[in-house]
Image (cartoon, rainbow, N blue to C red):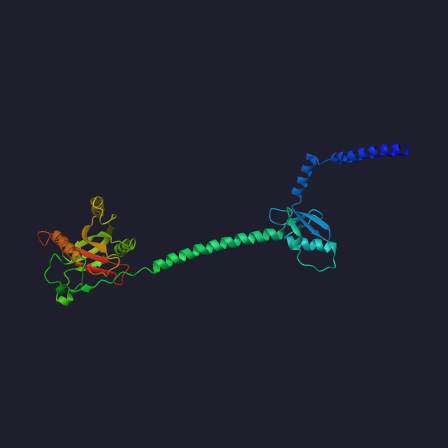
Length: 316
């Protein structure tokens, strides 16, 4: 009888053991409502301070300040809030700023600070790389070889003109006084005309050209240059050149002026005429000479080189 009772108890115990895991599986699990509630609580807890097992919660305001949910006191920085919380826990204990004990969305402020410093360092490295590239470009510009100085020779060295002479050869100019002659007329130039020529010649490192206009007094032999008209086209642009010259001609007529000369630039050479400049100047003087003294109009040639030492030269 005892053996039968023991055998009956054993099956009962095994049945109880089989029922235990079923009871564990049937334990209630967290519902969706409970999870949403936890998420809401996490959103409300903008910042938290934990020290000695005590937890303080504060709201991070848009201006960066922190408002304590326990006391409604607004603190200017996380350090001020942490010091206040430490004083509540242990007023007699001297402690640091408590920055490492403050968390924002479950992450310590030190992590945010390190991330910001790392990002800032990367930006500074990029700025340094850009500045280095700019410095390299400046060095390349500064290290560019200077133009080779061109030799200026005297006109008597040329001798008889020949086809093999380089038209870009610079020829030394001679003053009337050195030849024992008097300047044929008095010349004056307005500052407005000088400014326009100088500005035009500094707009580009290529050679530019323009026309000069003013008034010619036959009786007083006085030539007044009052205006300069830049040619707004490249020297090699033969299609646009006639249109530009026609516009300049109309502008001179509208101002009741007289064409009295031309100017051009030597960007990287001395203000000295070349053989080509001398030939062009002679051709212009012959065209403007006229058939008699009454119809004579002088022609002045001006050379400007703003990127060289000698800035101006007049060809009469």
